[in-house]
Image (tube, rainbow, N blue to C red):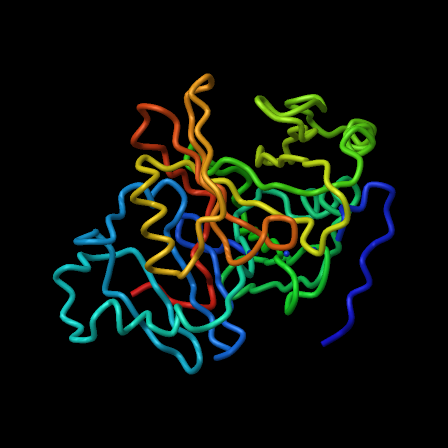
Length: 308
């Protein structure tokens, strides 16, 4: 694999990678380093709030292709004819060391988005491929090689210039060493700032929020050097405890921390495979009294795995 040299930039985040891809839901891939297998998680985002690990509406669970295992939200897991139990089927998840690989979503103008991510956010274009027979183009961007970093996979479908992002997806988090300097650069490039730099509500961490050309939100978090600048993916869920249990039991994630903010009427839970300062983590947000969110059509299942 060609060595990727991180782009020098005054706003280059502290240094790193996850991915989403093609069925109108949020999709994530996890990597198992011991078995060299990938587990593709499909239909996440707001649909997670509809999953119940015990008797949940989820699947025709698996399709194995070589060293890959795909998981798709589809049927009723409780009625699945597969004789293999959920616990046995996912036993390897509990044993293997995993990391989140990538996030995939759709954009209306691929070149415009690549320009924004490279010039304003300091990402590197890792590779790009056109699939004319299927009428789409992919571009992979991040802060380091795909085999060691969490990356973004952008999908452009021929002739479609706009998507409904929905309300279930919240934002991506990017760690930068100087939030104010980063915001100034984004302003100079014509970017949209939706929250000026300042301490997070109820805390001390300096943050800011921006939007990319398609309306996807990014939270800039002021941190010291880190191997994973693309550090968070935030999803809104309708039942936080149920979602925590789902990610723990189905995908072996660890609850890193949980914080309730009654003053602002929300609770968050950080899930992942390692500390927040060195790994990409999943931030689940429960807003008091909200149990459902709009799914939209901007998120993809992984095009390299088929939904059953």
